[in-house]
Image (cartoon, rainbow over all chains, first blue to last red; front, side):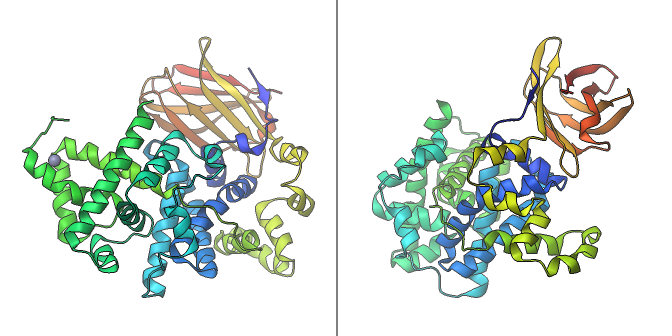
Length: 193
Length: 226
Ligand SMILES: [Zn+2]
């Protein structure tokens, strides 16, 4: 069952690209950057709210991904999750270092994330678990949705959310927990299918 | 869900902190308390794993955005700056090139390819034409897949999905002319592995790849197309 690779680069798995990057194959690196740059930049922009800073964050994320490609362990999670987590952590650090004022949650990206409207190309981008999580997030009461997005995406602690939303700490903590518990149900169903 | 390994009230009281731990927003004393508990409670440990999956999934919901023009070339410059000294000697010459040419130099593409890469299927085929895949077999069963890339450097990658025992295995290749080279070793865990390594010889010379167990048994083999 030998075959010469004649499919498009979209069919090359993330793991295979990382393996190529790990040994310094520049073509693999370019395909990987093209595949992920919109997602990494989009996440960084959503968190830091500034194009220049978001670019710095996304580039630093790629630098780390290239550096750590040799030690990526596919059993511990997907490449997408790994790259997004690296980006999120760098974005949160960048915010804490460079600005005292956190992103205004009224901004465009936050609003898009908070909206309960589905994007037309969701299905193409996402696994079942992601699609279900998105639907579940859209179905949460607005205050739980805000709490989950602020914590998961923006790295806000319960105390920070309590202060920003002018609510007691206990309320912030329970909103986070209730929201996450509903998303968990949706994701568990998707994993069991 | 009634399978508590410690008293239920303690686990229940732990849920909010457990959620925040999964989100990465818990710090200080609460964090070490939850970690201590999780270590001794399998129920909360599994709950933490699920909540971490959920937290990761939320990150995947962030909307995409097109990076500013020049993003790729600026990234290429940074990657170049951090790459090994072997490449340093080329830097001065490269610095007089345009940003696009620099990206092409660093990422290994001709400028023409770079400019048209997104537009036609034809181009993406040439890009990947020197990546060859073939199945990895054991006594008629397919255990996984082997990929050999003729890039610079040449490298191989394999995935093993089923059927093989656990433990350390060696990968060796047979070259045109019959010479055998050991490429490396890795660990099969539960018959699963995804592993890659650079080749020592040109990719075009690789005829077969074999997986060898610690006791010398050939676990699986693949024949590369000529
Ligand atoms: Zn517990």
